[in-house]
Length: 393
Image (cartoon, rainbow, N blue to C red; front, side):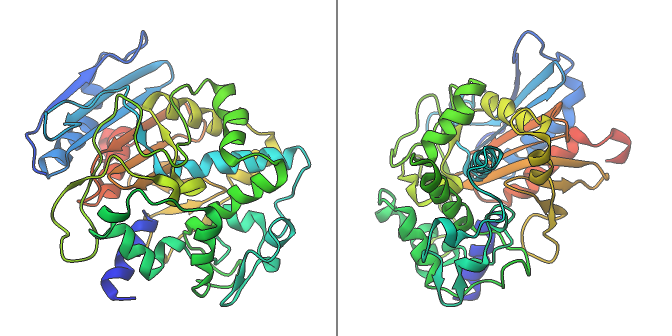
């Protein structure tokens, strides 16, 4: 793998010039109308667009107060503004949904976090040094399995993150196919001997859910999370290529190849390559509801809530700085010393962050409909603008 491709693969794991515009909108009956309280966050949104992103939006909920801000556009052709009600591809926030389902199965005594992958998927994790009999479900969920990330496979990364994707964007992938791609590469490290972000881990977790329950992982997420929480705007698209309306256009600048500067509209694509690792579609409101439930402990018994938020360090790995990873969630220590919790996601043309205080009472959900100019830096600045005391900025 070339140095450029290796760098691109790391960015994948972490992970248009338009006129600047900004607005605030009423979110609900409890909207905080003191816009100055969020002027710093609005400034980050405005700056992201001034620096070349198509559009950005963020919604804050702090107790019973809420605020919504936006900058830029949802569609660079029409100039249509971003809207609070938009559907967007929410990437690896999918991992939190999958982890909650697995932990619910643990609570029911149907599996254990200490079960090996081989117990449920015999022979699937095998080859080039991989051994599913030495990897536990816990290690899948906290990214310490060492299993090679299929998104870092040289051939697949080139197909996904260069202009070659324009020809294959509607191709379908089965999870078994993605795992097989991972197995064609050596492990990143021995199980439990390091930390490395791998979408293969959550592809396998989705497969285990299906083996244990006899239902698809999407059905289990719907039954155990989406319907009980009333997440009417959240869905697993499967192989569906179009987003429900309303939605912003999702713009991509490819990471590798000859053309890395042209923004392409990749709103329509088959997201099966992300599957149970990153294909979910949601909205601002639904992600607020879900992550507040996750953080506050509404979804799991106390012992498993503790498991979910027991973290391992990501230090020394090219990922998001100052983070620690739990079971499908992570913490991030901001520059002012405040720690926020939740998850984020990246998929073609869409970056999402859903992070907040450990009790879930103060949350920020944000989405950017472009994937260049280091969106992680932008999203982190948004968190600092909202969560850090003014005197510490």
